[in-house]
Length: 305
Image 1 (cartoon, one colour):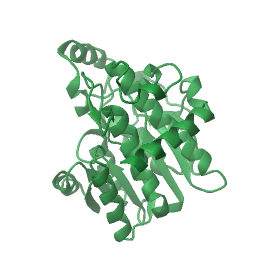
Image 2: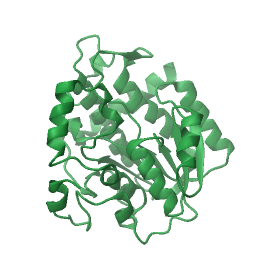
Image 3: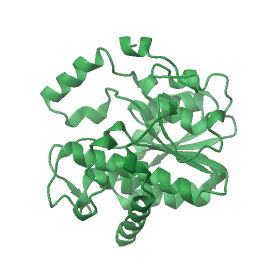
Image 4: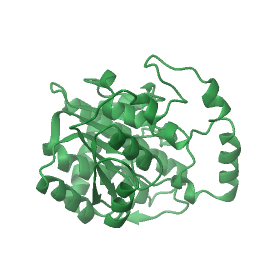
């Protein structure tokens, strides 16, 4: 545990910066619940799957390939169902949706954990900047495709990031989703995380009047495979900072697991959570018109694929 995590206070929830996924689920029985999780094969996703299965949930663990998802499930105790879901490939996402339907699964939670970060050069997928497409459009296609399988009180949890603050003015550069008007790695990553945040908030609005919820979370700063694209200087800076402030993977997985299953969040929707407590996002993340516009644009992109 870092010095910061050891000294950081707990919030109103009773948990805080140093809390782990096991700690926030201590005493909970998730028997009978089914939770779909993207990115189950490494980092936060694998820890979330381990803890959710440990508490009795059936975890539908998705990864880029069936082989990776299967290996991840075999490495934990409890019941898991491996499925392939390559978020950058619409055919793979749609096949995953189809398999969940064919299995007749009712999902108590969908945990959108997977993502890519800070690609050093502009890359495009299906004509769109790769981080926006993978982190947002891939999950948008998956979640909207699975809404019929979501339980009446089901939860959708979407990993955003404090990096959403790096997004361009207005949050989403609708005239530059392809990156052809300029590309900066962190701004593009921030935009994808801002899009994830808007997606959760708009989904929450659409769930209004039901017992379903949608929330976004910032997991914290964790040394995972997400950092593979960082240069040597950036890695060194992150590592030195980590002596004080890095979270461990068990700590990093805590907030998404808390949002997905903790009784305290039943009926709570449209929130941005960090350190297992309600946090403040950038002010324009509450712009309902931008969120509605993003939803419409996302639908148009999905329809064109």
